[in-house]
Image (cartoon, rainbow, N blue to C red; front, side, top):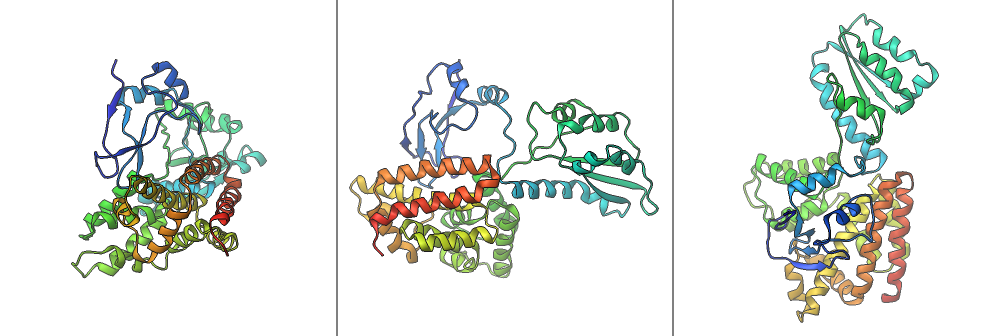
Length: 402
């Protein structure tokens, strides 16, 4: 039975890649054995060779085909929620805005917000709101959040005998397969369940390509990759940065060069993230602490800090691999996309020469674990992020003197 397919880089479609990580478990092992590993977050459960593309993406070149992938996903535990609480709520609020927007534009709908905490105080209160008649609006949209399974009977009773001219929207942080609400909404013909996911690298690149096409902008591949690494995982922040580019170049037909784009986005958090990468890898714990706290206090997502440093360190790793092959620094960095900015080259070279590749690999593994911890426990995300980055800076002290 064929269960594997080979693929090119999903980001840039390049087929020329090198194996970067060897698997602990052979992809040709018994498929039932592999299936047992296809669940949860386990940093030690590594299977499939990981290849490094010249664009920087680490991906599985040999992968499951669609049929077997569907089988594996159908047996997985639920994993809808993947970001911090604040970002997750913003995402769901935007979906609600989209759903309710067309109705509210007609000025015929009253919008009412309600909470599971209100139900705890008065189980009849939601019934009363749904049945009440407004003096000014004929129809009503009621949004309810912070619900738990203990509230299910109340909601089930309402839906079994729904009030007329009312749209009921329920919002949850997570909704596992075992949830009574999820089972009910996925089977009930008058209801539907909508999952909300964070953007990944592929969807972000699709957004960038769509933006470029819609605005007739001319960006080369290196500039696109820079945007991909720079833009926040928060789509609203990314949209703001893209709008800045649109306004600046709307009356110009010239090609947007990488250096021009970096200067244009010079006041964005990406510059602070670049500075953070520099001081952390310089082993400067004091400056690292100041800039990390500044970024987190300004509302930068901890995951953005972790991924920014990971991307930077992966570029160091790729350069050191090329240098091990006998290439000097200048030739080694030619594979990097986007290329190293000339203003950053001295620092980048210093990091490549002084950090041992064994330490680089340990740091990447540690950052991966930290990202997972931040996603699993959003309340401690900022603390875990800060501790992890400062530990890297502390390790760097032995390679740099101050």
